[in-house]
Length: 159
Image (cartoon, rainbow, N blue to C red; front, top):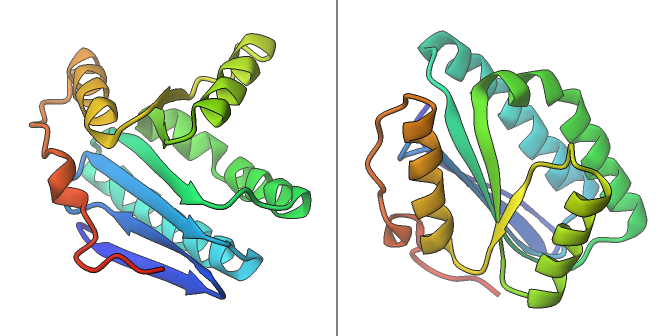
């Protein structure tokens, strides 16, 4: 299931890229909607079924370029993510988040301080996240070359 797929809706989209598995990149852009999140969550279910058949753990990198979602959408995202918690725990070595805003990175740091089970690491660039991802894969016994951030660049950025 090495692919690059897009889930569009309204003024936002999610791009999911597994072409460089065991690196899984999710990039969100614009204003996301419930339907977009739901289509992405169903794709995640199919991906985890494929990962289980392959028997190889991965790293999950979220490149957050989307606008700050409403509280209702944040609750929905949390709920959908919770439905896949067992799969994440079994197959994902680590979750890394690229956040371009230092303020938002600070919020993630605060979450980690308040809730030690919140094990997401944040980075200011995709390159730095990929370096950390490779190190974590190697620590987990998964051999993988770092594909570099250019491997994940959108061919035509959209507004």
